Amino acid sequence: MIRVLFFGPVADSVGARRIDTPWRTGLRWQDVRDELRARYPEAFGWVSIVAVDGERVIGEAEAPLADGSEIVFMSPFSGG
Image (tube, helix red, strand yellow):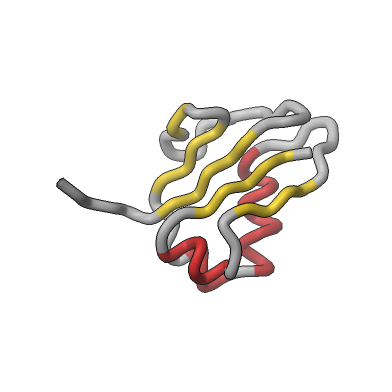
């Protein structure tokens, strides 16, 4: 199983902070993104930061997923 977490306006648009999706051999984070973007197009308009297993993904860098991986999708944020 792949755990997908959403933060900020992304979570608001999805209507959930977490979704679990089945793992399969060869699954990449981009595959999960594409499947979820088809279901929640408005949410992915907000996404600017992606992390896989605690490591930020830069560009379209390949990040193969293992069973139990975690993907985070979030929008830009600021704070202080």
